[in-house]
Length: 217
Figure 1 (cartoon, rainbow, N blue to C red):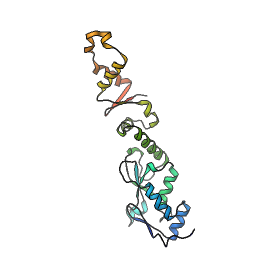
Figure 2: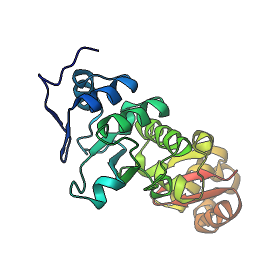
Figure 3: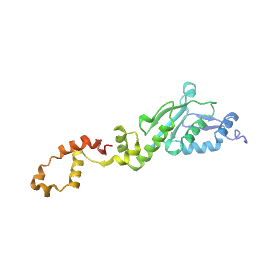
Figure 4: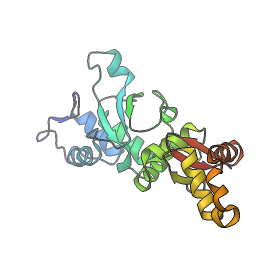
């Protein structure tokens, strides 16, 4: 590989920089990068922290030494493959022979999928699925589903009913769609107890949280 160290002395990260030496270039080459392509990759994967699921990648060595929080906020939605993500993390810390990655912070995804020392493939794929679902539906609805204890987002679309002002509002819709109370009960329809009916619905068949209704499964 032709050396580029005469041209690029250092690559800026969000905090700190990666100093380019012949040794660093050799490590980058093993990871499939040159200093130039790493600069392009940083531009592609750096998070602007504007709402996409992101994670901050430093190393334990830097954190405990003089470089402190030297690292980069990474937009997880810009990766489709976990190995590519990890490879990029190692590349931005190629000034260490065997960097021990430290994921020092996260944003815009549930806490249960964050781990400072081991952001593994299962968590990565869960965050990717979460991001895709939030692109299709209200993020608040997806969060309500997860808070319900449902980590398997593949069931979200089967369970999600919609957004309602109250449980009673949902019960009214069910009654109006399924029954003609005025025809069946006449003026007595005005005395139908929607609140009691809602209690029955949400006791067994449905779940309600923060304005969102889900079918139980």
